[in-house]
Image (cartoon, rainbow, N blue to C red; front, side):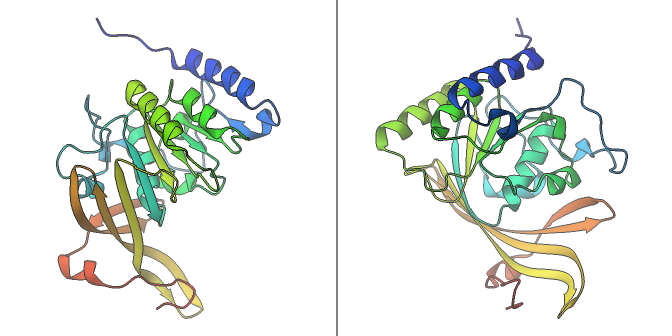
Length: 260
């Protein structure tokens, strides 16, 4: 028999429990999705057809990120460390929410929600916790009860081996995937490094950014290191992704401030 989950009740319960963990400034820090959100009239509805449905063992991933996880995709309950550009995290949020999943973005006030929307995200399925307070691990543990993915910036948070093992065990049990932006975990299941190698549409002092080329290096305990070249190109108000040819992946990273 399939279990029916009342997400409105789950979100209300998460709100109460996060408030108990982090009572100071909770109203300002926590933005959980409303029960019946209204889409902005100025933005087109996201195209969810580009996002594959999740499987029992793996999360929904956009087509351009599948080569980074060539075997079984990104397993539920895994831990992922992402360094460099945040584009892959934005794409994962878009794919997971477009497929009906729920995501929490924690301690990351500059996360690209508009960019996620342009890739098809359903922002009514995104909870934003701007400040997890002095005990972010407790907040993550609470969120694991109701979220498919948690995106978190650890900052200066220090993990002891026992705390990391406990958090990892809870994430596995709840089948919630944690993506950290920047180093933090001692032994994540997967490590991703995204380096921008080229920009398109801009010249010295003028132009409009139309596309970004990124090389994503993925590795993990059961994953052989893989390099994937990705181009994200904006067309009207949506973003389209494509894979780069092998020779382009070898280019060095580009500094947007200098163009080299």
